[in-house]
Length: 130
Image 1 (spheres, rainbow, N blue to C red):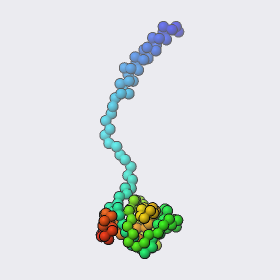
Image 2 (cartoon, rainbow, N blue to C red):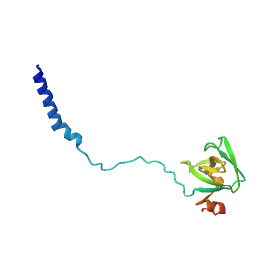
Image 3 (cartoon, rainbow, N blue to C red):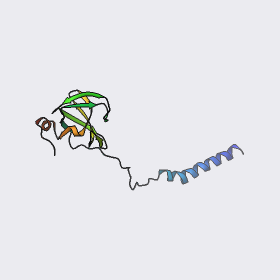
Image 4 (tube, one colour):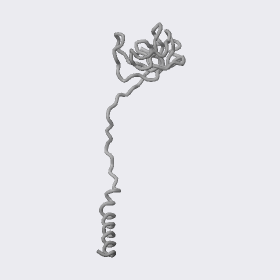
């Protein structure tokens, strides 16, 4: 096969690609719907709390046996940062673990030892959310 015939074949293949394949590549199809998998959504109605226990251990992880990183006294005001996705049993009660920050301590406490408030001012006044 000589050079001229190779050139014709390559040119023909290129023309065929441009008119047959290229329009399919550039055709945009409308997306009818995107289905996302369901995931548990963590939401907090209250971002503040007060400690309702005389001497509460703040833990490094949301587990009863986790290392205690600090202690908070009764009526200490805490900022609630997050909570676990599922409640669990601890000390005979079912509740969530809450990640808190207070007095330079950041860690996890069990929800049955907290009273919840909508604002820091409410927490300082002691107005409990029902």
